[in-house]
Length: 236
Image (cartoon, helix red, strand yellow):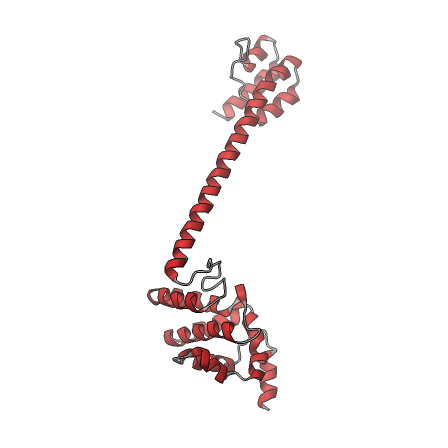
């Protein structure tokens, strides 16, 4: 009867079996969780419960939100140890320890740093405790150094890409400006509109001392002249 009940629970997508929670809490409260988890989980239990390590967050959050600070701490410790100790229990980026740590961090921020430090020292899961890459850090201090360096490198890369984008835009605008004079002389209103859209400067002087807009006026290119006036007004 007990075995049938367990098998029914392990097939559920919405409920974490109370028996599993109880075993994990006893493990996490132990002075030696690595030893306790082997005692708590038989080979049958290890196989029957392993799928719960990769469930969607909601059922685990429901469990976590109902626990006291000490029990939530114990549950997270037990899951970390379970991932390290039991076969097929490693859950990577979907580890329940991630969702449970977020609850702990929100409710007990003063104690969360100590717990994060313990997790990093005792876990090889590269996604713990925050659900993002931990850079292989073994302590919260090491993690914070790596995280700062990563963010600085990311910021520098974004700045470099922004400078390149601006340089590319300026280069295309300069090329469009150089082509604008020919389009005016040809009275090609479509080409002029396209070049203005690319950032061509109709007020920049050409080799003969006239700007493109002055050239358009001198050649009585009324439509082109009006388009350039409108473009200047739009861009200030």
